[in-house]
Image 1 (cartoon, one colour):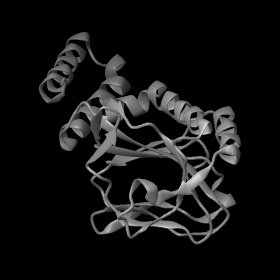
Image 2 (cartoon, helix red, strand yellow; image 1 turned 90 degrees about the vertical axis):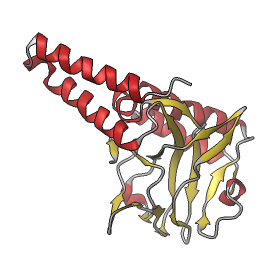
Image 3 (cartoon, rainbow, N blue to C red; image 1 turned 180 degrees about the vertical axis):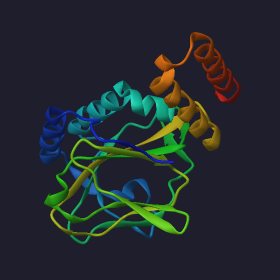
Length: 222
């Protein structure tokens, strides 16, 4: 299951992130994955002061977004970073690493998130393509839009042939380890939010009891 969030960032935040990117030092993306044979992009230098500001903006936007929180059940989040693709660059088919060495303990990558910062017409190619069975689903939303998807899915960034593709990326360790359980609980809570006012208080209470009990059973409090 994917979660599309069309308005994660405000226009002002998109503009600030684009401006930060003009001052941010970009390095070879393989610095964080030197063994990859398919990674061909640039990423913001994590030691650059501009990175800290950009990362904070992206983290704050995700943390305040109710759709993201409801879908991801976030427990830990890798510091978001900016990545840049110029003509001829791409990131071939891959699945993200299971664990990321962040800070004092590794983060388990349950979900991946891409946040788009360019107008779709400003560059050709560069779609985020996520494999779903025998099909590939392409995403190229407007600036400020985000796509959240399981880190276990095979995905790629198609080659950029014109312009530049600027985006933010991060990885989330979810409170709900099991993917199926997480998606079922999201659906249940989503129905409660959409239909709750139409239900009798008794029915709403019983459904809420089921949702909280499942969260308690499946949640990782460690």
